[in-house]
Length: 77
Image 1 (cartoon, helix red, strand yellow):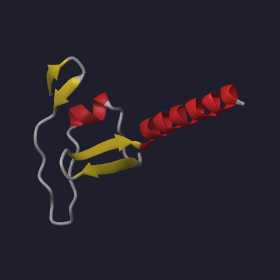
Image 2 (tube, helix red, strand yellow; image 1 turned 180 degrees about the vertical axis):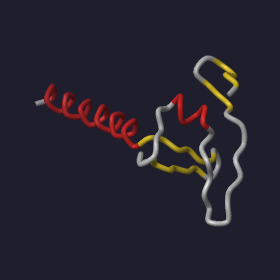
Image 3 (tube, helix red, strand yellow; image 1 turned 135 degrees about the vertical axis):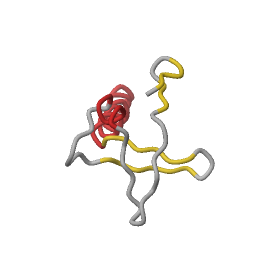
Image 4 (cartoon, one colour; image 1 turned 90 degrees about the vertical axis):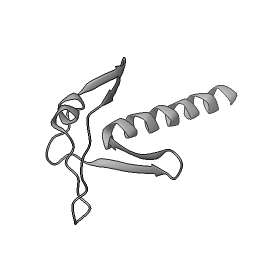
């Protein structure tokens, strides 16, 4: 694992198998605490590429946005 800029990493390359599967490098699994049975969200942007995230992190982010919206609406009432 190579830290390019603080908090930004390159974990190496992976090959896609015949069934479309990849192996997430061990360093990445360790850093992001990914273990067997975890649910990951796969997102994509045609121009920027593909991203994989633990569902919990995205859920926390979405809840933060929704809580911000709720707080903003309460203040406007």
